[in-house]
Amino acid sequence: MYVIINAETGEIEMSCAGHNPAFVVSGRGMEKAIHEKSSKGLPLGILEDYAYESVSFKLKKDDLLFLYTDGVTEARNSNDKEYGESSLKKFLTRPRSKNIAGALLEEVETFSRSTKQHDDITAVSIEFTGRN
Image (tube, rainbow, N blue to C red; front, side):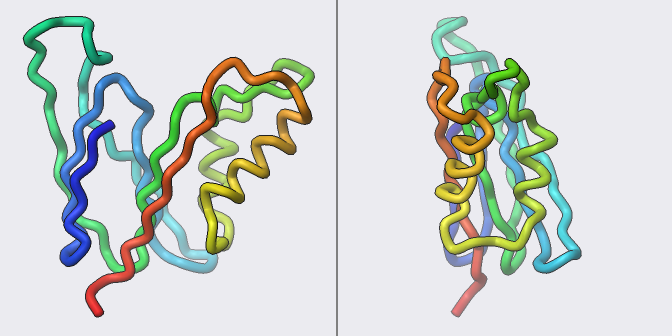
């Protein structure tokens, strides 16, 4: 996932190489909406001269851009159940903490309960606060 962010305007340009979609969470409190953002693209290195697409969109004030690796959604518990995209979306609709990625890591670790993970667990959250 490659993302260019204009911190002044909230404009985003994003390209994806087979990565999970990004989520934009709009709104605060109980009125939140989640929008999936992605572009088509093969994983890097599959084809030598592959032309990657990009998508552009604009964040509104207080929107949250959330990026994550598949290790988040594929984290398993002792019953071999995955955390899953639906659990991630439920997490993203809760009231925001100051450290969203850290809070998600805690939740995934609690869900996994010391089950050895098979993949990295990485998350990045960016909140657009608008112009000063």
